[in-house]
Amino acid sequence: MNSPAVTLRPMREDEYEDYTTRQEVEYVQALAEIMPAEAATEKARQDRAQFLPDGLATERHRLLVAENATGQVVGYAWVGLDEPRTRATDTAWLYDISVEERYRRSGYGRAILAAVEAVAREAGATRLGLNVFGRNDAAISLYQTCGYEVMTQQMAKRL
Image (cartoon, rainbow, N blue to C red; front, top):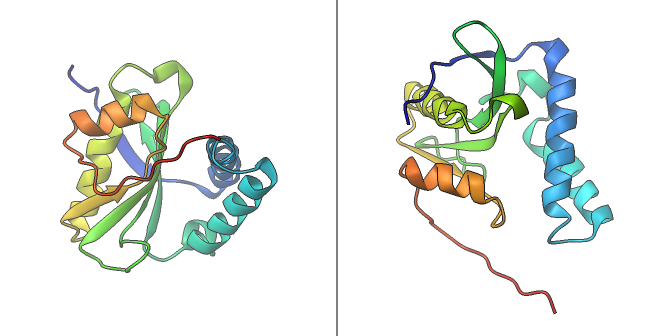
């Protein structure tokens, strides 16, 4: 499938709160599958405070809006320009990628991912890391078809 063209631009202040609120809701929903809802909500809040302490101005983080060829917003990406645990600058980190509902299954995820990879390369990274929840089959498929490999894996069984 050929990916449509996208352009990434910096997120504006008026877009930031809506994006982070929506991203946090989705993150809490995913976390709630592996921990109690209250703990998931608290973890999401702690992670946002830890990784985006200065919001859009957080150093070495890029919050990006993806627009298609006609200027319509088709998705978003949040990339850190270093690895979150080690702070190694040779590995950028994809914290979030999302495609607006009406544009899903149209190649925009692949296009946004490729554009984020270019941002990471331009910043000097030679790798782009990410985490994906095990039940997110669409994302896993996207990453695999784009050449991403499993580096670590956690497993659990409900008892």
